[in-house]
Image (cartoon, rainbow, N blue to C red):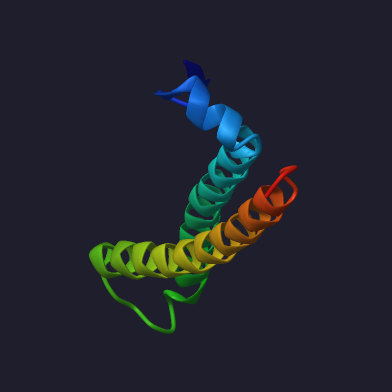
Length: 100
């Protein structure tokens, strides 16, 4: 058995797909980048809202809701783009396997 993150993968599967760990590392990086984007995007939108609060006054609930929604959207876009890169990387790795 080969450990792949929290899961264990059979040796035969790991041998058949030698790039599996690199692909898993790529996916992990993509998801962490998405989480970072959510935090940074939400924080940035919330800070901008606080600066503009004098001209556009509304409650804290709406500020948090809008910041969370903007952060979620930004996170989705970044994670989707990075996941596509990982998928392309996986296809590249699979084509590099000798005998395929």
